[in-house]
Length: 181
Image 1 (cartoon, one colour):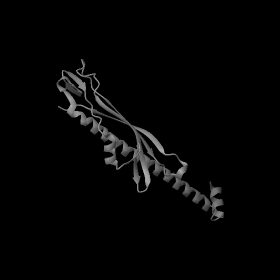
Image 2 (cartoon, helix red, strand yellow):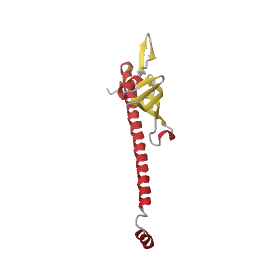
Image 3 (tube, helix red, strand yellow):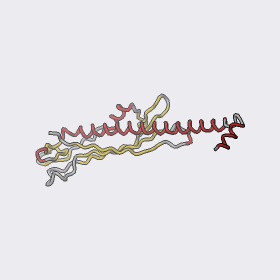
Image 4 (tube, helix red, strand yellow):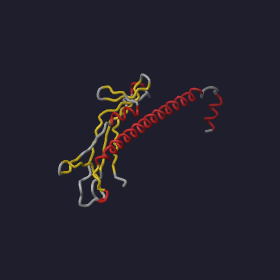
């Protein structure tokens, strides 16, 4: 270690390229970390918005929920004549997302623009509503009213220009409805 210090001390300025290389490496690492954080913040915000929209769709079913609170269950049913039939409201989740996130529809893809550049794209929304069973024999173990949704999020990566592919992930959210009273 003393030998290395002596060599550096004898040749003044010889450490300059090393310092520049270390500084550039640190800048590249910081850019990578900041890009990673940007992607995670966008994914988290979109996931929260999708979850909010799915919860709203589940809550839209409250008016059709058969009031079985006394028995400890509830589901989306309506009396039609002398029989009970499923009645589920899927709502318009894309419309809620468009209003919440400021998306613009382009074909089957909903796009968020930051100025002229694409910030992220949403597509392939699937919603599955699972109705609670009507008058189950064991309400404690019965399936609850549940809304499941999955959507594809694509975020262009700005670090490295066009050399890196966009981040593409499937977000899954779940919301349930349970009567409070």
